[in-house]
Image 1 (tube, helix red, strand yellow):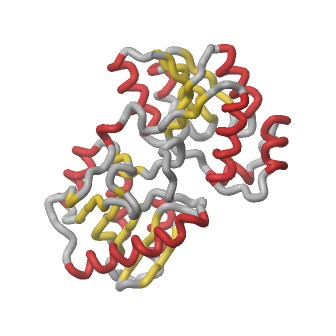
Image 2: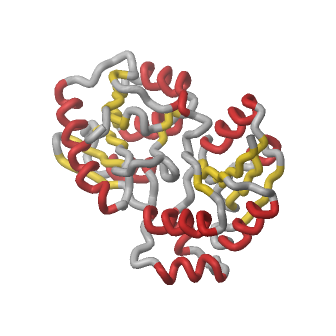
Image 3: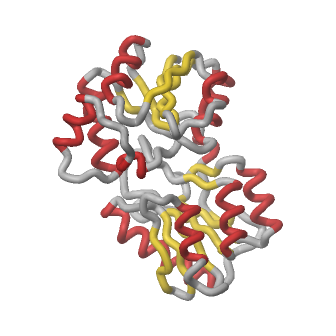
Length: 271
């Protein structure tokens, strides 16, 4: 099978490409400059580097490669929207048509443009279903009563905010919302929260947005998440079961268990 893969940051595109190679798929990578790790290049059948502002070039590459299915793997730094890059005419036209420029609007707009060109945006987790979190306690230690109350409260906050498309993570302490994730990402949000609580323990909730699909912006956690949790005194993590990717799961859980961090997978509301 031949796929296109738009590579952003993190381990996501690397793991997807390794799995594709294992399955014998041909994958052409369109790597986003200042986002994608260089390791994607040797794993790809062919690799094209573009900026986030070159929507027209993305379409030209996909069509010249004969690709009709493309998946997005990895995060795109949202602050790139405020860089000095000038959008090409395809992206400029798209941006001008959007009433908002949040993730759903932007990537949803790109999806519509691709579909008009006969290119389908595939499920981001297509090659990595085995990495999705399952329901229940994932770590050796279960959340204690205080942690469970904080995680439940944080999940209610995260679910309420999901419709506004401003982030996926919430930091909670003592049934109080300490910080919400926006463009800075989960790690930066946790560090900001840690500076506010004067040593009180934090809990982290990562919630997927209320979408029927997993085509883009899929929540993820991995060893780097655990390192930041240890650094900031965050003792428990709740993720959406079946909708959150756990990268390098064995290493991640070993680190969590050693640090006595509790991790749970929770079935999202309505599923």
